[in-house]
Length: 306
Image (cartoon, rainbow, N blue to C red):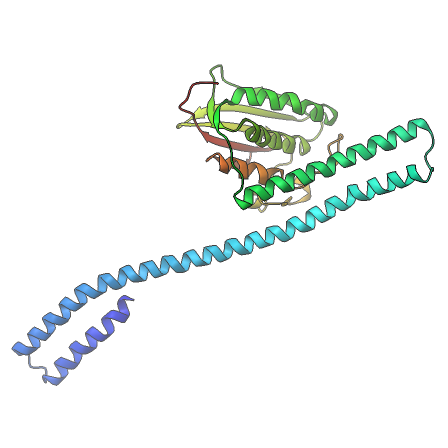
């Protein structure tokens, strides 16, 4: 923009000088002064307009990149969920047909088949709930009622609920918490789901004999909660996309049905990230010397402990 403005100004000056026969007359001086004033006024304006146009171009490019990324995530989500729903539904159909056709008649076998159907149904129900939660987050329909919440109490509840999954998998659970309350403005239900998703993810990717530790602390006006595991960690290429919808990355971090933990919908971390963002907080993941760490940072509440 600056060059486009200077071209006619300098061209006019060169033309006037050429017409004057290189004679620096009073008229040439006045013309030169006028052109300098014009350049002084127009060049800054051109720079401002050019910078604004550049920002607009970059912003439009970022929007297009975000739209492409969102479309890619949606396609991956449909592919993952279609595959994951097909598996339990096929199992439910096979088990129910065996019961209906009278292939299984022994009372113990009937009870075992019925229990398997119930477990597969629960699995489908969890996946549908995850899809519904994810749709609310992405549509902007999620509304949270924030109130003072002590993170220590949430951690105790999450660990108590997670032991049923950790013990069959041979994974130990540990909590490191301060003596003083750590109060944040949060939705008790939503934040509990965030921590539950992070702990469940850590348990699912920690080998037997490993440990999952959840710690709470404060610093720089924020409260933080860290979930550390002793699993295989996350590859460098997967880290930037670990919170995307239905992204599971390499096989090392893909959910597997071990220790009674069924594969999830691939939305747990994406839901956690969306809920943390709704709390005006931040969530991050990084590798440690052994395993990886997920950290949630939330603004400290100015209210009294609940």
